[in-house]
Length: 480
Image (cartoon, rainbow, N blue to C red; front, side):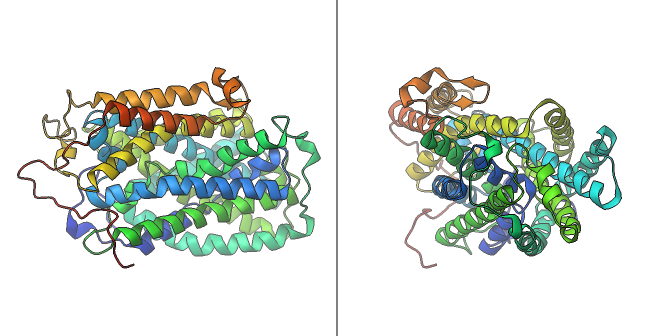
């Protein structure tokens, strides 16, 4: 299969051969990995019981999917990735806000996937062949996972799609075996080793779990969905079918692995750490399937994240090729893996990362969706590529390539979110207004959206004279 040559340029119609089923496959197959499974461990580690943990994950995932899924329709219309598409609202240079947010999101999730997957691999190999759990072992395993991830990401979308199709079937079977393996030790009681509710009370802790474990999953895709839907043709597939496929892919792709993580957390009594107890509680016959899940699943998920990072860096530095950008971010992600392994606990690192990025990313998503609704899915695809061609002008040029109202609105929303966040090592001053409950993502999205509606009350015409690109309204009444 040839290496993909496309960066963030517009995908020609003849190359847009994917469909809604491919979207479901890639969202399901790539998420059945330990990097997503481990988020199901967070609610039990916060001191919640089984039903409280399950409800927090389900509510957060459904709420986040409702916000995130419509973003998939933007790239269906623009035929480029979401950060580049956001130039319609932020300006062709202001779209760098989306590129940086997407880069940070993908960087964090890539590092987390390789970190957790590598730790489980070392533990499983220790029980199988006596591999010592020392720095050399971790370094070699992390390096092998990173190398395999880079190979898939550099070859591009088609290789990752084929890998996701295999993983969707293979990982489902491995997780089903895992349910059988860990079932004898399962309990619905809160884990006493967690030390009670993390935030002192049930509801504050439940809301923290809803955001950190449930909502964070869909929010991680706010800049990623367009990487896949840009290869789907709106001439052959309706917006409704693509939206339904996105909902299905996100809900299944996130709930299945996360609930498996919750189930195994209680079965393995994994209150303070997940990887170690998961391996220790595994019956001998499941060690090889667990090793396969840790390796193949991690490569599939991290490969997609790394692919997205390469696109975002390519958008920030147009002169860099997609392949060169992917190699660069792979090095940075691998460094982050070692920093996470040696300098932080998994619970603190994961909680801080997802809460901070959710607070910063939500207002960007809200503003982009408001712009999408205003223009009814009609974009000037050629004008979106001005920055990539190192040119000037076009209807999205605004002021020197920046739309000041949109950028200021995002900055206000992100600032409020950071001031209202509750982290293990930091509490924002606005928490006193919310009774100590972390509502950072709600406040950041609300402030960003309201500010944008006030500062830019009217939509700009999305199609300049002479453009040859046309698109149907994104929410037209179509048969599925």
